[in-house]
Length: 504
Ligand SMILES: *[C@@H]1O[C@H](CO)[C@@H](O)[C@H](O)[C@H]1NC(C)=O
Ligand SMILES: *[C@@H]1O[C@H](CO)[C@@H](O)[C@H](O)[C@H]1NC(C)=O
Ligand SMILES: *[C@@H]1O[C@H](CO)[C@@H](O)[C@H](O)[C@H]1NC(C)=O
Ligand SMILES: *[C@@H]1O[C@H](CO)[C@@H](O)[C@H](O)[C@H]1NC(C)=O
Image: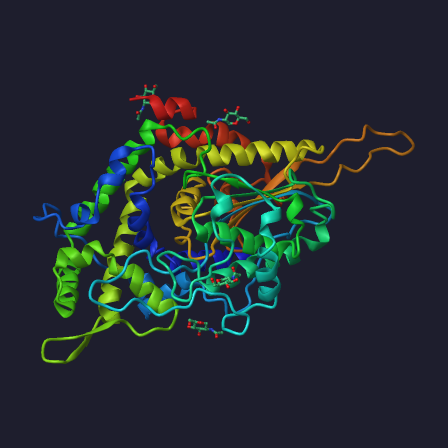
């Protein structure tokens, strides 16, 4: 109950403002299979002249205003500053249930901005690791040492050339910071504590039993390693094989899906229309550009909110410039708040429009299909099953994952966000009658889904609270399997991935 109420609160409070921050930043990289996607630039998206779009949009957020009077506190939630202990519900089950497997997808931890604001100094952040600098972690020193031995692991190309720890005294664009490393050491340690008493892994686990996959960005590689180290301190490199996912959708060999790209393009058009119709946003960008002495188009193209977020997360004052008369002028939190307000509008409209959900179902089917197949293997038991699988990913991976699962109220994935799939087996039914040996029948397999430590199983599309059977504490695996293999395509009026992807 408590968990559920807390989730609902989180949902209301966290309406994913920051969402589109990075969504807009990375949208263009989403579909590497589409050549045109890379050609678009932000000026083309953002600077478009006349607005043809409705001026009558409402801007009333009573619930948010009463719950979150300070618009910045939401941004702090997104920062996920590792300075407080966290409640985590992973590993909780009815008595006597056996944990069979755990699959985790994470967003990388805190990173340096991907863009810089024209005419301003880049935020001064040190991306080397130092246990004596805050935020730190008891495992940080040992982690750095262990990463130095990474050559002993098996790395799928092109991962072997990616640095295993951040190591620039002035961060590079998009580099994981020490905060990001600490966030994932904490995630790993948290899972370690959650699963300690469930004997998930044998002490001599094999490369098949522990699965780590990541995109080739250094921030995802390093985040995955940090979580793994927190989970399995001093793991044996010789047993570790790190797999590469070339697509941010983790779609492996099943990435071709023309319809997915069409939904994404429609979604981007919706997003664009909303943005160009927003007078307050236009004025704010114009003010900021005037302050900096640059063209508004140039400023918008630089996605200033990404860099401002980084300032905020690291407790740095917003950037200032010296104006013509030698007067100092700075970007303000009020301007930042306007951009975030627009992102909230966008997030809300995005959910109502439903295009993103359709995109997300197609985007995440291949990953969910693999997740389901692993669960089946683990439920059957045997040596070939993955017991712990970790996918180290991006916001453009987790956001569609949450949407595809039907977690429409979940907040946008903050830094170091985590989605966890647990597979459990109920105890074998008690033997009936005495004396006679009833057939030894295994219990049933069940799934749990958690988002940032909250149990969201009964908020998913395949296990709605309203469909829950009495006294059924967890969600049957078969619900998840039929969702992944057929039911998830119902929002597309289809019954399979092939059909949904290729039908015109
Ligand atoms: C943690 O850091 C955030 C952001 O800097 C701050 O708002 C919050 O008060 C801090 N919490 C604690 C318990 O120190
Ligand atoms: C970081 O870089 C410095 C200078 O290039 C090097 O001496 C040091 O060994 C590196 N540290 C790690 C952990 O890679
Ligand atoms: C889904 O997984 C099954 C194996 O469980 C595989 O045969 C099938 O090709 C997969 N489909 C997609 C679209 O990834
Ligand atoms: C769904 O598909 C069926 C059969 O392909 C078709 O008859 C029906 O019109 C479709 N409905 C929608 C809303 O597209």
